[in-house]
Length: 360
Image (cartoon, rainbow, N blue to C red; front, side, top):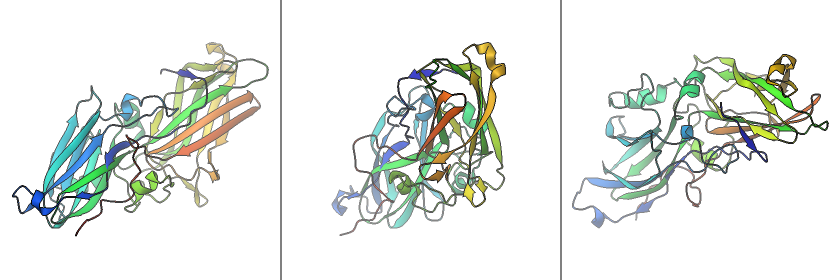
């Protein structure tokens, strides 16, 4: 595990793929002589920014190794199924003017799936029952996310195609995971060091869906607007268990220094206790900088809170950014910030909702 020392606290944003959404129509005369079809065009771009501080480049796991677009007819049959990008060694920079020729006069649903080509049992190349398989897939587990070279992402948009070409502007796809970042800050007045040998996050789901359930159709719009999504489902088979993170060689934080752990990715969770979502954190920490002093480490429990009370959502595409400020072994402050925002890849105004229909 590589540790990075920083001079300040992470601002923390979760970054999700930006693709483009809004609608500019063409006239019928632009149909190139094909009366039964229209061209559906979009721009596609890689994740912008990332890292715990929101200023460094995203790690490889937050970049796009593979990207697939699947366009469905209203009956669920596949009209297009294209692997747009497939190069794990070179993350997707950007693709402009990607065009699909589609039949007119019906409602289309487009699914955007990233970093999911090797998910066991998903079989994205098989068109039979593909939409149902994507919707039902619940194999996003803690073990899978720890080993994944790139975090799976997904989204879908529904729109009508009538008698004109459509320029779709930017669509978005969101991580099928929650990101945790932990920063330890030493403000101990006696000038000594402290060490951390591990942490435990309680009540993390054992599995989550590739594509969100129980959210309605506006979940991406809610993320774009900075609204916390609290209505969502996890698989019925999922249970909430502690997730333990062992820190190799014991993390030592010297006086007036900050150390940020590498990002931790876990399935979206929904632990309900007494009518509200509740999550707690245990830290194994103690005084001393010697790696052999971990016998002095003790468990210290904290309840994770948001800006206005208990942490009330661990929906996908959320970044829980936790600062642990140690002023003494008896005074440890846990300052938690929760973020569920998507950042466009260029300075464009965010677009809410699905693609809207245009007519004269």
